[in-house]
Amino acid sequence: MMTPRIATLSFALFLLAATLLTGCTTYVNIPGQTGDVASSNPNNKKIAIIEARALKMVIAESKPAKYVFALPAGTNAESYALVQEELGDLATSTPPGPVAPPPVEGAGGVPTLEVRQITVRGWYAQVDVVKPSDPANLAAPRQLVTAYLKYAPFDGWYAQEVRTWQFPVDEALQKSRAQGNEERRGPATTDGH
Image (cartoon, rainbow, N blue to C red):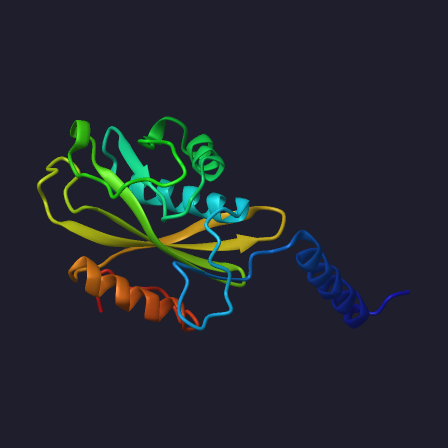
């Protein structure tokens, strides 16, 4: 008969082995940082899933009719296709190629979501997406929205929350990157602080 402690330890070892054998993406910075040991490959299938789930969260918060999405520089056509498949009719990429040009807001009258940064730390991920502050007004200033996700064994990546930054995009990207490099401590606020 197995004691509760041995059963708990056995389960923990099973989860550790499963994580190692499945190649869990545990430490990622996209774009890469100088002197960093983290992966910065935007063409990992798990990164495409994280991007798609984050984009779905941002779309759900904004609720426009349609979006165009752009992924980080260096993303190949296969990764674009994986994200497109997950998003379905919610968004499209133009062009669906290996390197998307910087989005031109208002191209074809459709707002653009641009994935700018991805940080993964173990079973937590954050994805920074730049979008128009008012999807109905393509001339509106662009803003940063950070989507927070968590990985659950057997369920995959799921949405936790979305944070809308109240800083200019470049400043918000720096603050978000700094936060992504630290351990996440509690829910984020939406006031930009």
